[in-house]
Image (cartoon, rainbow over all chains, first blue to last red; front, side, top):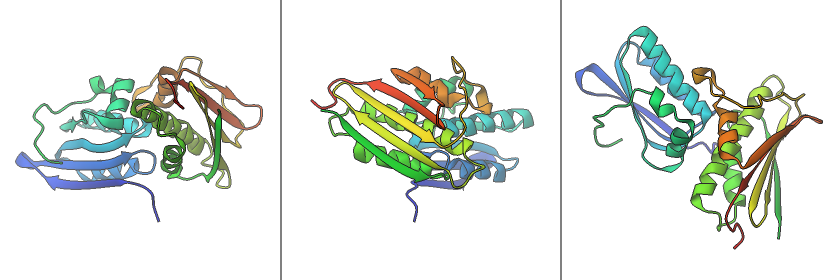
Length: 111
Length: 132
């Protein structure tokens, strides 16, 4: 039995881009799954859609920042679509990390 | 009237999730959603710290205590660890972490650490009319 509410799907996008869609709660129990999905994406360009997150704490924040550092160092394209309201929005606002993340400006619908 | 709650959890990767669920069940319906969001986040941070520091001792538990007064909510998270001295002014250190106590410092009305018996980290959040 688990109380964890988290779901992750990786779907092919256009132009060889992989789209990783996460929903639910990004915390100590779920961050490793996002890390694994990012690793599995290998050399692909990645778009991570975070709009379905209902919660994120600093463990999730750390995962996003680490992914950004890794992609930058390895010359891979990585962008995030961020939530506009709710608990995950609160965390982005209070940490101020949005300025450190590559934000997608052409978010596709759905998620 | 003051309401007090306390719960114990085994230390695991899901403890922060479980602690947030427990908090949601305890909080009176009168607490505004913005305050609930802040409390969920800060509880998750303190419990995560507990689990990370207790990683080498599987038998160690995490105690979560909540006190709801008319104008203040106090949260205490306690482990059986030997304690750590937090930085006076926590600053985030990018992907290396450091955002947990940074958030507590930023969002809580006041907070502190008591290391006399294990590590007990507490914070208080001032609210408007918790019990109407």
